[in-house]
Length: 387
Image (tube, rainbow, N blue to C red):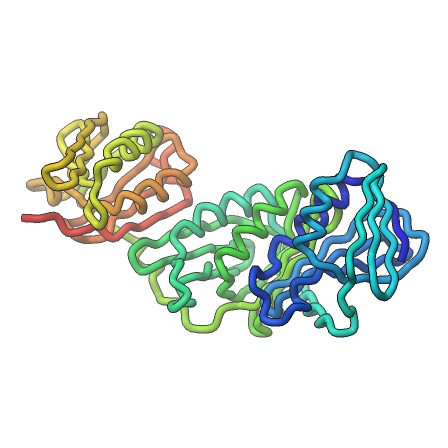
């Protein structure tokens, strides 16, 4: 194999393909990055039996062939090269990189032992890459981190015609985002439980192109256990597949349909800034309290007698119960509240309360006195307050 390509193209392609390489591969061969050159250009691939990544880039190919080398080492080298064209040549035992006066020689791994990448499922439709990245970033904050409960570490993707719903929960909070897309079939339907970390990394890495293609199996989407995403990047065409999570995702969508007895509206940026300040004194596993008054909310937190903090923010408060306010104080996990507000992407936050200790729904508003709630919904289970 003998190829020549630009340094930035190589560095970007290697970084993308190597990003999902395992830190501790189950077998050494999985630490490798496969480079295959033919008349169409160069393809770089990685695979750990769960997630595959593949990127196609343009290059001058003098001799076709393939080579397998340490992916992380190649990524480190590619980033460090001077801004000059890179010439790569390889035989059965070693690969050589020459860039200006810099020269690296790497031992190759046996290509014959490298597993075949999974086949990309059939295309289900396309979605604007910016919309996809934003939606995924809003939902993954609610996904669980506990690998002992894998079903909660995923994002459930539901397809219903021209709508894709993304849903995640860790049992203490839930996030839902519905977005329109262009399905290959108007009757498209199905569901898949995608690992949240893979989905987040994939959505973020494909924003340089106009659209992302979602690939799943037919009308029973996800039934083959694999989902794929593809799109254009700065260096070339990017494709990734990942194995879907097993298990039944809990039926939590109905928890989004909260009929509020009291609502609070406030400036999102002011809430975030105040919550960050007040949370500095919040003792671990204690709540950040929101005291609800007639035209304001007061955020409070404390670490026993050692430190206390409070800050008032003007707010529009509406009691819909027809009697005494059903709730005058709410306890939030500070991290959960800040996560929800940070991805809200709206100038104003709308809180829907029903009763003390019951779930709270947070949505976005374009205008403080507007009626149209935005399509992102985030539910947080309130913490019990003492007394």
